[in-house]
Length: 105
Image (cartoon, rainbow, N blue to C red):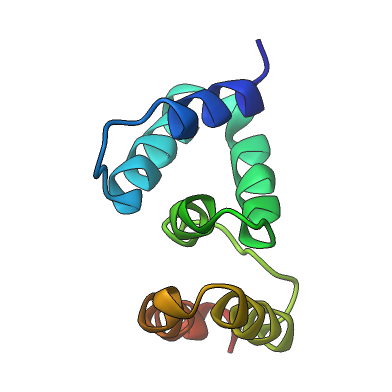
């Protein structure tokens, strides 16, 4: 079983009302437990940021220990795209960008 299958399973079979941040924390824990898969977890998170699934986008924003873009400009552009797709995540996106800013400057 591939780690992407595990991640998809966790999203698709989550408990009702599970906060996305909780799943993010579990995935971050898996990066330590499954160290060889850590990069793959973050890569999948990057693809989730551009997905049409609001929950996956929110989970991916919680993977804060990874660079989710190659530059600050790219991250801001990604953030604007997420806010357009999911206006309900606007505040979360702004907080995510603010928390990530120091890593890109």
